[in-house]
Image (tube, rainbow over all chains, first blue to last red; front, side):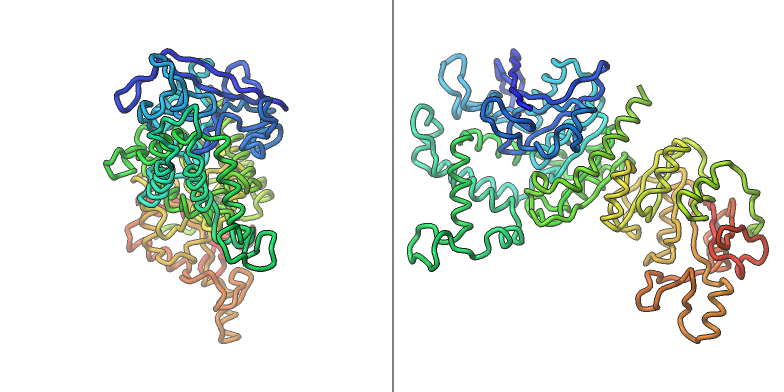
Length: 371
Length: 213
């Protein structure tokens, strides 16, 4: 199935920071058909480095979507039954307005004049897209990692518009450790002389800094076990140590490959802005108690975490579940066994599929019965 | 103390539940639960009872289960179950969140049964408690004959492998209910699939109580 991204332009978007973006584009793809009453729409929200291309084969790149194993006919998000929509986040670099977009008043890229954005800003723009598509209520909002943060934000910002929420491998607020890893990534980019205070468009991008940032990211997405299984201490294309600083180990080669590949598809300034949005994310707005914030939530929830995910550990999901229970909301929770670390939500899809399929079917039946 | 009289069997669904779930206590519970109510099942396994209650009685069904694999299967069948420990898992719920809180054949496995019972009646208006009766004649006989921790159909485990850590009997439960000033609204005694009407402490393998504060 070949898919193409579409772009919708809105006049302006008011941001949490007080700034206004005008105009603002949002790129999205969709899979499956909306039914007549538009009651079968599912909004899928991508993680930090994802984009609108969640499923099918991209007409532009020829590549499968980042959640192609979960979205499609007969899959967890069954496109024979549901219409799945995925958009690129605000601040991104894959069709939605971000720091690499052209600023209308200067005809130059925004670069660091792009306003600082939040997860709530991303969700506000998604809401404009959903309104534009004429969908009054989403059957589900879902995503892993940063996608899960957006899903939670949806449940609180637009409680009437979501029948169910599936936050996966995520948190209600970024922890010190999560902020710390993001900050190291940002510092790597900003320490690269090619970054030039963000004004590198039209010249060499800060490829070395961005690659290092991505290498750190990939370490946090894996687990000790999965790295041992995948690489161990194996050497790369040699029998003995090279006694130098070229690649010796498989794991070094992998990280370098991942780093340099990322540079070709991701904008370094988007890295700065999106990681900052994650770091600002705190559903309690600094008030501390998570249970009070879910008072206005109305959706059913399916919360999923993974045993080996140390970047978004299960305790963060359990904190969400406990807060939902305090309001006696309909919540299912499961910690799935996996060795893949944080990456599990993208690669370990067998058990996730069973859970999500059952949960969605029940949600759909309930919503139809209520309608 | 409450009457040991069994209620007359009613409802056409009972044999169906028994066939489907193969557990006589489930059949009783499915009779007790009123349609359209909110139900929390503690130690709900794979959610078979909850699914049945949701589909046949339109209840708002929730469950708690410690085994991850069972939780997965329950969620896959569309039941809202969360993975957690009964002994500590109820604290987050507000008072009177449910019409019924069910604890089926699990009280004897909890670390602090009295605390669990009190919590059930805090978060629920009524509690349905089903437990294996440790005073059943087969248990008594087994112990008398062998001088060892009893091993019967109901208590099949070696003492060092048993999940049962707090053994109780029909008399024990009723004494506790009296001490806690609980009102026993209904009680049922079962031996296999048959109702027991006399000498429940000796003849009942399983007892099911509906209690409230």
